[in-house]
Amino acid sequence: MDAIAQWRKQWFDYTQYLRQEGFLDDQFAQLKKLQDENSPDFVVEVVSLFFEDSEKLLNNMASALDQKVVDFKQVDAYVHQFKGSSASIGALRVKNVCINFRNFCEAQNLEGCLRCLQLVQQECCALKNKLEKLFMLEQQILAAGGSVPVME
Image 1 (cartoon, rainbow, N blue to C red):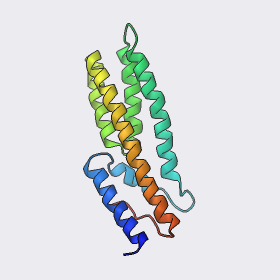
Image 2: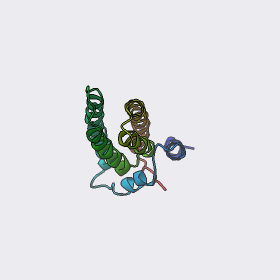
Image 3: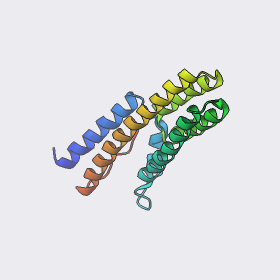
Image 4: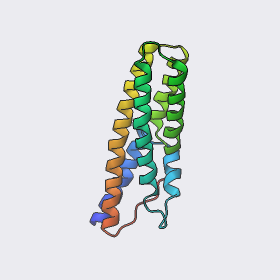
């Protein structure tokens, strides 16, 4: 088996793992389908924007939850926005934490919100590492003259 075939197999196994573990869902595969020769970096760019926005939203949530009087409606608005952007890139685990987070906002449960904020930060960080690894594999395949497999 040549290097390209090995990397493609690694890529395939890794994307399967990311889906089984709930890091990514079908929406990510849909995103990948929008990528073509004219926009080879489409997914990397979309994902980079997601992480830039995430950082701002996470900071906004943290400072909103740090106020003497917490405006849960405002926190919920941030979480709702975050849920939407994570859903749009197929970040399933992040989206699911946000769904839970919104329930705590509705209940005005500060402790629950703070726990969810931590979870969202952890999931975001984990996802970022996993996607960086995926994109590195793709770069290796392309650099070797291969083509990145299509996600099922």
